[in-house]
Figure (tube, rainbow, N blue to C red):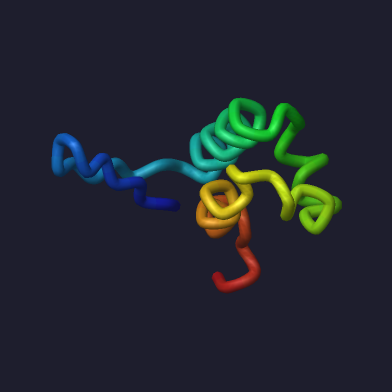
Length: 67
């Protein structure tokens, strides 16, 4: 389960793993124009994109290696 914060409304939203993955995929597609799967396979390829830091910040939503 992931928690997403909406700072403009000071709200917390708990997301299921599926919802978190869908949100991450949507953001990657919006900012980088590729699927989350493609992004995660070769992140270094996108490091020069100005939106990379914003997407990199969201990786914990789909990275279950720390659970």
